[in-house]
Length: 362
Image (cartoon, rainbow, N blue to C red; front, top):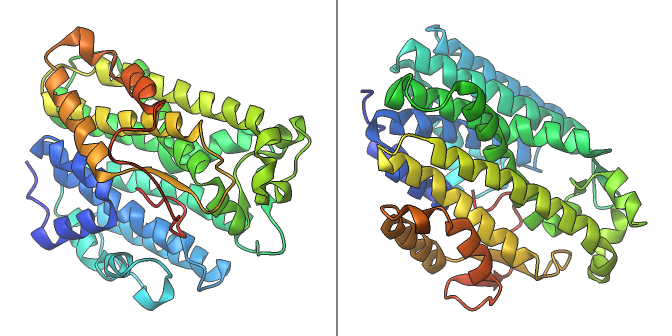
């Protein structure tokens, strides 16, 4: 078993991701350090890619330098990383601390087994390639124009690169440390794991449309917008929601289908350790509930931000944990989330001012 991640890095992880930290705490100890480290490194690349304080060219240089350092550490070589100043990002103080902690993260990476190091380096390269694509596509966008994906194939490629690949990584790490050759074959798990990650990313995109549009980004493809006679610029107007609704609902259905595949993934995992199933279930249930909530709101109105509050998350976690020993209830949990969200009444479901960040509940 790898050494535990230092406590101050665990605290940092909690600061940069409220929801994922809960999942990480539930994971079996044999993979907790590896998954947590991969998350922190990926969050660092996301912070670099997402800042608006430096040019696209400098962001690309920093992304490539960090990926090169990760590969060097994974291969057992001395990692050389140019300084990444926290003042060069416009995120939170925790994200600035994260960038300053990269040398220590690389040292933690170097202490892992070679197989684990290579798995982490592989998923980081894939994620960063998607982020580089994002910077190249949207890096020059400004308030005077909105760049958009051209078609559904570009959207699918993007959500695989930045999130679907995580399902593959997660599966291989669990196979190596938790259940070996038992359980379903890799073909099913890898395919379902990819859809699991894609679904979570698509929910983020569909929830945060108003924020992205005002940053010059439109992830809803042009060919889909053309179906309802809209342009990306038209989506800046909240009163465009009626015309946009058919396309938006179709995108939500796609996200739901991916999460359904993710739920099949969860239930295909070995029943023990139960902690693994629960850790995988929580992000899916949060995603399903979010979909149910945004269906009823005008996501083009920048004054609204839809999220599941802390109370709602803890209630979801408690109910799923209590339901786990009862298969007939456990398997219906996603449907229960869809039904309960229709009322918009449970404590913890919030409609609050948006933060100016792309994936602010990561």
